Length: 410
Image 1 (cartoon, rainbow, N blue to C red):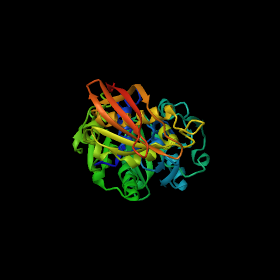
Image 2 (cartoon, rainbow, N blue to C red):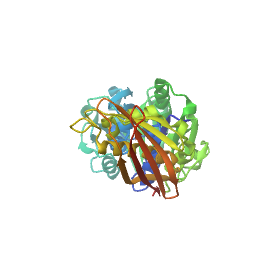
Image 3 (spheres, rainbow, N blue to C red):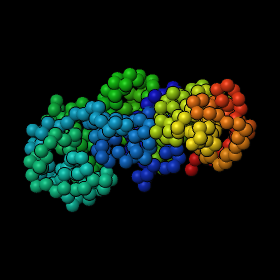
């Protein structure tokens, strides 16, 4: 694939106005991952608030990374291990607390599944906790209660003028120690120096050996601009500010118009060709699925033919030592499924509908069978595949028809 990594903002980008991942966007991102492109969810959200979204996208099995706290931490979703982190020096907390109290601004930070705050009843604070699935813990002495080094601290206020004034003051006062910026009109964020999405994404790219031209970045906010400019292809959402769009290479639809799916379909899925399908990666990622449990391995892919092998062993044989017919049908569905997956247009999804097999002979334990799928019918709403299964000596043992339904993503 031309691209290896998709850096994706969350709120206003991945999620629609109801804070949901739409079926079309989810289908596009799953197909993209199956083709070997990994996702980096890059967000100001805490890690606890990103993990459920990552799991919904299958990043825990397909591989991927959480870039949380606007770059304060990177988590490998497959291993759940932190790869990178940078925190605020706890000695700075008393000063931050004094200023927050002087302005009577709610002050809060995150710790695992808990949001600690001086103003537990503040509407913005409670919504932030709810958004990330966190419980709220009230603290009277913030600096004393936060007995750890936080990734970031935040102030909330509806007084935009006062927040703007404090932001300008802190940019000078805290220069060299902390960075300060507005993530929303009502939020002022304090993070370690030089922490932003682009700097942390750059660290990840260097660690993975990935060049800028291998990366797509999609976002909608000012915090995403540096990431959009870093990537080989930077995409702004249709709901982004004009200043963000001006920095991007392309502008897609809004987050309520499946803008992420449109960009993925246009720049990644439209370029899919059978010769580019990463069979080794598909085999590796299927090791915990049915195909992996049966020992199925893809070996060849073209527009009209897909091949795979399967051992005749304790996983796939009858109790009396010959290949199980059910395992043979599963092999046929696996190769026909990949064939339709490759042939589908970017805005289409494949669903298996029917499999019908004729078993002509047997294969014995210790052998390895080979399935060859050829396309018989490629229609707008259906694909019909013929799958012949041979022994290692090229004896035909089964001939199977597979019908796959082709539908538009919703």
